[in-house]
Length: 260
Image (cartoon, rainbow, N blue to C red; front, side, top):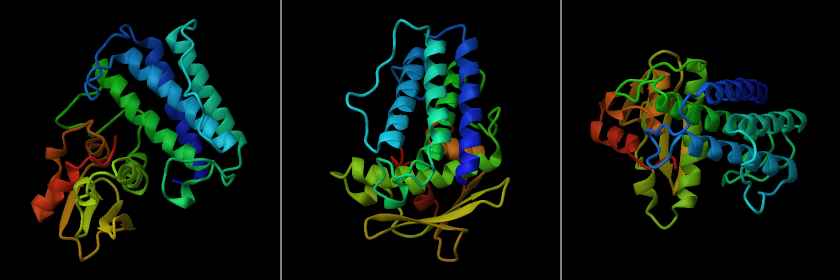
């Protein structure tokens, strides 16, 4: 996903989230994928993450203290303001402007990084909200989400391995890398509804991702892009995905703590 596409996708995703929050009849609805959270907690989290990311992109440093919610505002209005602040700022900043990022990958320390990252943050949590409200099934199969294309979902699969898995290796550095990303041998992933495919491997403690399923892949995980994306984020049933080749290796990667 290039910078322009990511910004357009982020604008649409936040607008859709504003609609979901605005029409929610119960903000105390439990969020299935986030035990202990209700819709209010979810929206509070997402709005504050938007403000955190905007500050990191604009100033080159994470905010301190962490942003807090304005409790005097209705939840929907406050979230809409956070989303507007994020998208307006990211649209103004040159994508290649140096910026702070949690990523250990040096190429991610640019303002444009936050366009894509916040799109996927918003999308995953919009799914959370829709599942809390009963508008999207919890499982076993979630192969479609309103407003999410197969191409965007495929980009989300790539982002898990390009951004989130490397972050996990740093965030949980006290645990063996092979436990966090169990892919010492190459493992392929492919979308059955698009041409998107990748091969992932842990090499010298770092995650490598190449396009396409290489002949060296010992296993191949496949499924619709949305199902594969959401399964990696724990929002859909990973067991419904097909695995060919070394099934144990493929299932181990699907069950790994790749994301927070």
